[in-house]
Image (cartoon, rainbow, N blue to C red; front, side, top):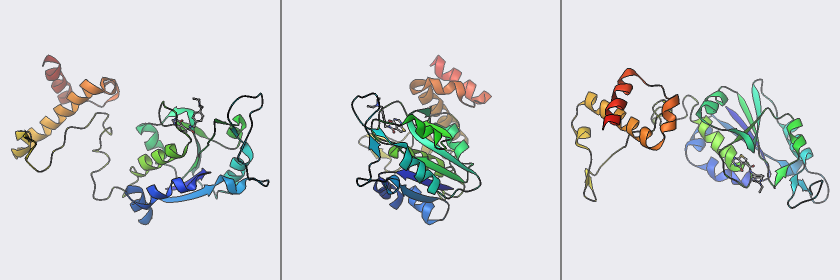
Length: 241
Ligand code: 9D3
């Protein structure tokens, strides 16, 4: 998977690309990240990438030409998608992450300022994504969120870590609680079932805890979750108390 990130703040990406899962994926050759500085495509003495809004008002608007030229500079693979990170986009979720993991190249266009010239959408943007209903200062954190979530789905990226299929959310439920040593921490014991060595009992306990948490904290997720008849039975037990 190759990501090309268009931004006026390429330095914001370096720390996240230098350590952790993404860094390992890049070093292992499974993910390739290229940073394109939109400012390199700005003209004029000040290399401005913003301008005052037509019609007046506060704040500056991102001008479309540098973004457009930056996009044209990207060498396109056969199977590539251009995404603009935008508060107006559809909300990124795990289904979209899986979809994106099928592309060979994803171009992430990050904008800044109070808004972008609407015609930026005419520069070859295929899709607009938001990462949630809160105001960020630009698309950069959104691009990192998308790169992180998508990279985890690429075969080989997680390596020795748990499979992403086991990850929280991949079956649509919240995860069961985890425990490690010590057996007693601040007077709290690890649930005895986890020390029982009975793998079937442990599996059932974890599944029930997973369902319990989802029921309590995110009942909305139960609608879309893939539930087995065993899950339905465990849910009934939980609802009866
Ligand atoms: C104060 C201006 N805003 C009114 C609510 C408009 C606005 C413009 C530009 C708000 C945010 C931004 C910059 N945000 C992003 O580029 C962005 C974003 C976000 O703000 N929230 C969630 N996902 C994303 S992806 C890109």
